[in-house]
Image 1 (cartoon, rainbow, N blue to C red):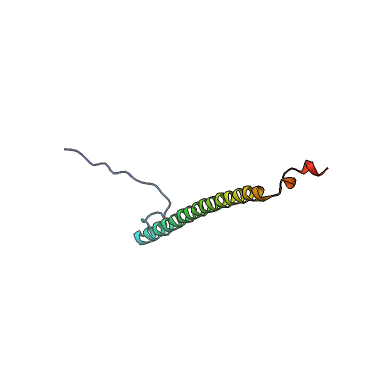
Image 2: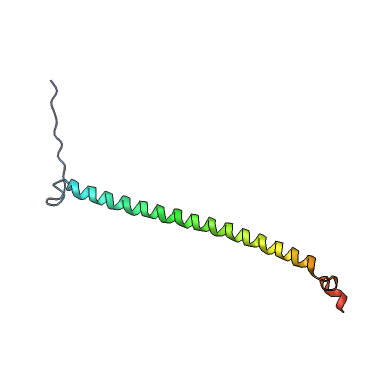
Length: 86
């Protein structure tokens, strides 16, 4: 026959003697999870905006290069090279 041994847990009397209220623990966990989920959402939104701005920048830069090439084609030959004016 096996005998059960009892272990004594020594802790401070009072507040630590009883387990925490399960509702309070659930609410705390819910709040922490909500804060974490909101943080992840903010990070994803920032990443999406940065990618959108990078695409828009690349598009506008391409438009500027195309406009510069087009303007160079229509510029008079005397204005193409500034050395001819000396």
